[in-house]
Amino acid sequence: MKTVGLLGGMSWESTVTYYQIINETVKEKLGGLHSAKILMYSVDFAEIEKLQASGNWEQSAQILADAACRLEKAGADFIAICTNTMHKVAPQIQSCITIPILHIADATADELIKANIKTVALLGTKYTMTQDFYKSRINDKNIKVLIPEEKDIEIVNHVIYDELCRGIISEKSRQEYVRIISSLQQKGAQGVILGCTEIGLLISQKDLPIPVFDTTLIHARKSALLLLN
Image (cartoon, rainbow, N blue to C red; front, side, top):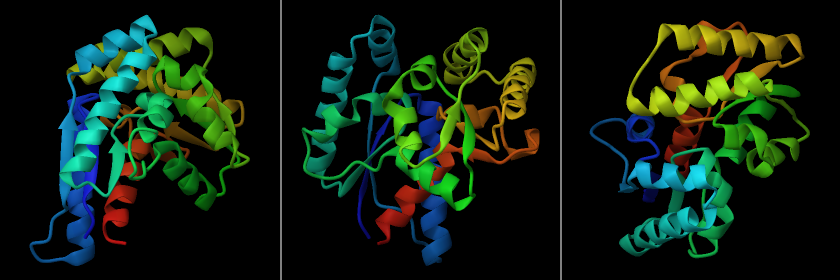
């Protein structure tokens, strides 16, 4: 079994899901008392969020690259960054290590292709929804990405940072997300990417009539399968 290095804490609520899903998948595949070989570096999210808000991506990249180097030195065979947004600096992190990064957008695109999705809605932080670092990797697979209108982008982003990252699960916010996804479905979305690792705490397949692609679950399962190959 290989060892995965998790860059977590962004937020820790969703990192818990990574740890659980990776171990459950390994147990499912190997049986008995098997569990996953995991190294984790959990950052202080307040520090990262402050850098995001100020647009200082270079310093946030340095913090995560340092953490990735520590994971490599500790024996990780590959890195999984447990957040969608910070994949914005994945190239900078990769340039500092020799082990590969399992990119969350690539793992998600593979699942979209399997499901024959040609047009997909994307919910995530405002950075993930409006910038190209994530969408372009989906577009490269010939899949069209739809994002909410500007006012709805602000709603989605507010719920992530002010509620989900603080462990707050609101029924009102769930209904707002369903409304926003439904509006994108009307524009042609055949499925929806939960493109923030916290959104799966609020929305699941039972809430929606179209296929849900939860990036946390997809990325964690792919990490577990890579451990075993």
